[in-house]
Image (tube, rainbow, N blue to C red; front, side):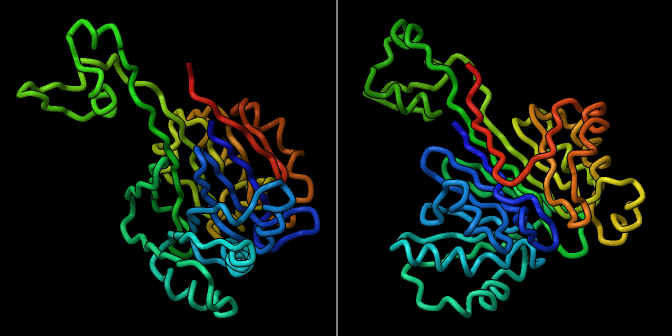
Amino acid sequence: MLDVCLLGTGGMVPLPNRFLTSLYVRMAGSNVLIDCGEGTQVALRKFGFSSKNIDVILLTHFHGDHILGLPGILMSMANSDRTEPVEIIGPVGLSKYISSLCIACQDLPFEVKLTTIEKDQGEIIKDPYKITYFKLDHRIKCYGYKLSIDRLPLFNKEKAESLNVPMSIWKDLHHGNEVVLDGKKYTPDMVLDGGRTGLSIVYATDTRPVSQIVNMAHDCDLLVLEGMYGDDEKMTNALKYKHMTMLESVNLAKLANPKEFWLTHYSPSEVSPKKNLEKLQEIFPNTKIVKDGHSISINYED
């Protein structure tokens, strides 16, 4: 089961009823935080999560509404007696920004590992996640992220027994490894019955529309995009500051066809984002304009 919670849905500045955008993902005891705006540590506690268990923090870019919560998160981790390392992944300049932000939280009782991403697209494996990063179109370098969890193929016990495959090597073969035992080679196709669909979510904020979003999110379980502006007359601002309107985002969702689509990262001027929901659902019915704390548990297909 993959648990996803949108901790905050605000853009630019936090509001009394709207934290800044941050996404929390949990699977098989491994926890990932995407973006960490001011107030994220409060949102975590409010919605029943602990900063102590975060393994990886993914940063889309270095604008303040996406990173200013980092010192607080790291201090919360320290106060929870955490000793395990935490890894922060982000664009070029990561070391400079983290050093500047965290001058107030020296002598942490755990290691902070920094991984800088430089290419336009690539993959990082953090079991059980395959993290795919892809470049967006914002005023500064900015990335979207796809988190995928692969699923082992079906194991055919009858097939394995009929071919006299020793039970001691079933697990290795199930994981796709060839095995040589007593001079005989055994291959995964001797015990497997084809692939099974895994799980995937895609998160992209602070960007103009780019084709990579559609490519990455095609038929994914959950797509999360920004809905900075709901009114079409805000297109001038969207172009100037390189954001998307809700209409632009939902048109991408229609092309990608995720099982569910969430809008987030609303401008402070969007007092009632849900007023746009009906017209957006006419374009893509699985659209949700969500509030802070909105969550979902995604299960494997049978």
